[in-house]
Structure formats: C-alpha cells, structure tokens
Length: 252
Image (tube, rainbow, N blue to C red; front, side):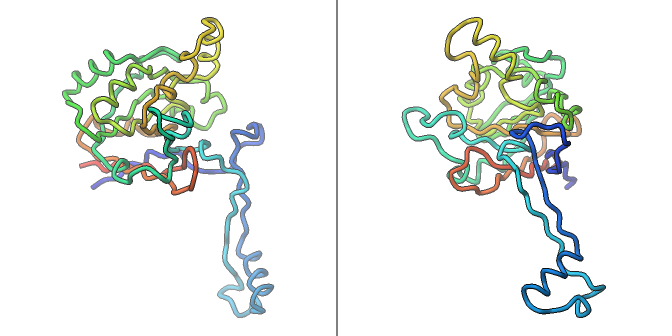
C-alpha cells in the first residue's frame, strides 16, 4: 500500500518569521551528547563508539498551530452547542482514520467562498456519495507556497454553509492545503469591519459545530479523488486547542 505524506516538515523557521509563527529547534550533536554522558554517568568518550554520545533536539518554540495540525472544537469557542468544547486529547481516535475524499477547488481565487452547492457539485463530478466519517480534504494548490511567509495570505474560504453541509452528512474531520480553513485572515477582517457584524470573521470555525479541521496539508495533488484512506492522529496534548499530526494517505 503506497503511502503519501500529507504533512509539511517541522523545521527551523527562517530568521524573518514573526514570533507567533516561528518554530525554533536546538540541536545537540554527538560530541555534546558524549559530554553529557560523562557529566551524568562518569563514562568518558573513549568508552563510547567513535567517541560519540546521543544526539538530541529540543523544540524551544512549536505552536500547536504552526505546522500541519488538527484543530479541536476548543480552538473555535469555549462552548459548542451549549456544552464545553472538546480539547484535542478528548476526541475519539476513530475520527482520525477513515476513507478520504479530495475536492479540487484550485480554480478558486484567494478569499473566494466555497459554498455547499459547490461542494455537492464537486462530489457529483468525482462520483462520490459521502458517508459518515469520510475525511474530506480540500485541494487549493496553495501548498506550493508552504515555506513562504506569504502562504498565510493565500487560499479560498470554505464557508460556514459548506462546513455545516459536510457535518450534517457525518463528516467530523475535514482538511485543507491552505494556511487556514476560512481563507486569509486579513480578507476576513476587512469584510467583518465593513459589515460591522458578527459571524463574518472566522465564520466556519465558529459555526457552532463539534468537528476537526486539518490545516496546512501538502501533496493533495498526488491523491486520487477517492479510493484511499487517511490517517491523521494528532499528538495527545492535554487541554490543547490543536496538535501537530503526521497526516498520511494510504493509497491502493
């Protein structure tokens, strides 16, 4: 079963990345590991193979949303449908392994809405009828800019209407290869301020639905529209609004 990696790499951020978006990693090489072995246990480097100890890495900065990750309902609001929203460690594992579906919306412009009718039409085009626990992945093609700071300003907007339509058909995990599900934040902000009303900014996130989003996927162009499985298990971070995940497609 060929595997397709749908996760972006976790790596040191460029120096021009702002702090909220950064990933910082400290690397300890084998010489430093040997010194640590001697300091902790008194074993000198001459008693280690090639004089080397262990190499290790310390993540000094890694936001739960700063790589390919799964959002939990707690990220959207403190309560969902009148109950306390679930954190990432509280969600059922069986949500994160299921049959995958890819919707191609690469023709959509940045900030352009994707509504329920368009989702339904795309499913009709690929000949797929949704079933409960399908994992729906939205391909925008914006992962081509994954490593650029400008990536956060790219992507169409999955509407609250489309999100609700998917949820009502049993979809609990949906993902996108753009920076965010609702489209670029600056465009959302502009529209919300112009209208001066709630429900415009972050509309799909705050649709009052207990579902998960996978954001910042890559390589959706390597998948068929259907006929594969998705494994997207998030790290079990207690009380967290999201967690990084190694998202993998299992293809025939």
